[in-house]
Image (cartoon, rainbow, N blue to C red):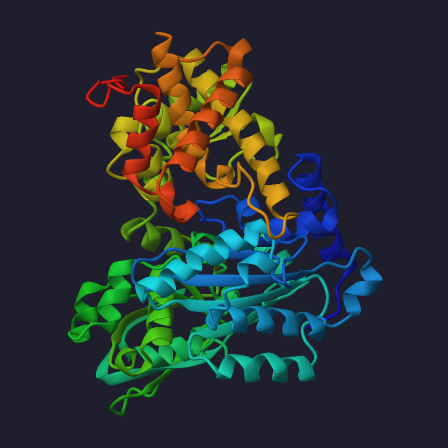
Amino acid sequence: MHAITKLEHSIIDARLREYENAGQAKGAPAAFQLLALDCLFPKKNETSLELITDGVGDRGVDAVYIQDDPISPTISIFQFKYHTKIEGCSKNFPETELYKIMAFLQELFDRNEGLSASVNEALAQKIEQISSYFDAGIYCKYKIYLVSNGQHLAKSGIRIIEEFCSRYDWISYEEVGFHEIARLIYRPERESVSGQLQVIDRQIFDRSDGDVRGAIACVDALSYLKLICNEDLTSIKRHIFDDNIRVFLGLDGGYNGDIFRSAVSDDNHLFWYQNNGITITCENFSYNSGIRSPVLTVDGLQVVNGAQTSHALFQAYQRNPIRTQNVLLLIKVYETAKADISRRVAVATNSQARILQRDLHSNDEIQHKLEGAFSDKGYFYERKKGQYSDKPNTQRIDAFKLGQVILSYFLGEPERARVQSDEIFGSLYGDIFHEHYDLDELVQVWELSLEIEQRRQREAEIARSTVGETRELSWLPYGNWHVLYAIRLLANAKEVKVPPHAETQEYVTQGIEIIQRVVTDGPKQAVYELFRSRKTRDRVLRSVYPQAQQMMLFAV
């Protein structure tokens, strides 16, 4: 890892100030944690603040991100190290932090009964969720992220972490350094990557058209994984995907479940037929056309389409390497020295493939109308994620978050806002985004959600500083959408569509009190499970309207 440059330091420092100025973090170290999580997992449905466990009793675990995949959840464990002065950035990641994480994980795997009582409340809630996987017999993968604005581990530290990970076939680790985060933000000059792909039999065809040359081949999937991964196949080289127009949405475990299942299934010989394959641009490719099963050598490559497939294959290999080795993959390789051709290939191939539903809807007429309408009210409506990242955080309305607000308040389905948020731009899109809202009401409900969010963040901060005690509002970081739902019920009881602006604080307080009663009086269960259940919504309804289970309260 090269020494930190002044330019890299200033790049990150500027971003950290944005987090501090927006009131999202107190101090550069806390802002660095949020920045790193946003860079690594920009597609996550949770806010980065929800993942933070750093504080009193964190046992060396600064953040936990649980990707609740139905097949095999991934538990990401983070340790951050931030040097406030550039001189400190020359230091290696401290080995002492490794022992803390390893001890925590060992107790977690051993189901140590005293573990939850020895950590802060934020981490205890994560342990509770992980324990539910143990109880259900669900196989989980774990990844340790060592994130720093300094140097990577020294050789002795590498030996320590690799020896620990070698004891378990479900644990891996990755080091994320300062220059790697800078690359994720601004994509400075990247390392040139070359590699080889094993062609199956004579299944390769190529053609040339002046300033561009192309090849289509059927290749061995393992050779592709060796191309895009580090030497021991434990992590993907992110910079290989720099030219993929959606790559920065792909680090969120962003592989398609169907692709994953196809790769590890008994009939994975069908993978080639079911998958659109991978598109690569490069500076040069070559192969021996006179022999069977030639090796295709690719220099200066970029994967411009196929991030989902790449991550799916990688996860499949982690889960079942023997079966994954039988997979065959369609590869398209384009050789060109012209950057504009490479860009056009990237855009065109992604346009023809499956893309995020949000991307597909970002230019819908209703999205443009919402952007204009909110602008008149002093808000910046983000049809596209991060569209107004240069604007104050309090004035930005993210389309996805607005969808969750509408789903919870106007449609009365708070558990779906948490559990089925992927459907906001899918099957629920037409129900959520339409022109039949009163703009003032929509703004007022959004501002209600902001007040709930502020209280939620305060509770999350308290949770990170509380060890061995249970607080009344410990559920709030998970139950914000149910609070919004309860406020709608309260407004209905007073025969108003939305609470008056002057009564925002009062309604939020009453909504929290209702959910507190439901949590206290309901069955004992993990908090994260409680707010994923429709039964919880029904109990909230009965709490406000004891006889109103059948009332149609949410006609917009």
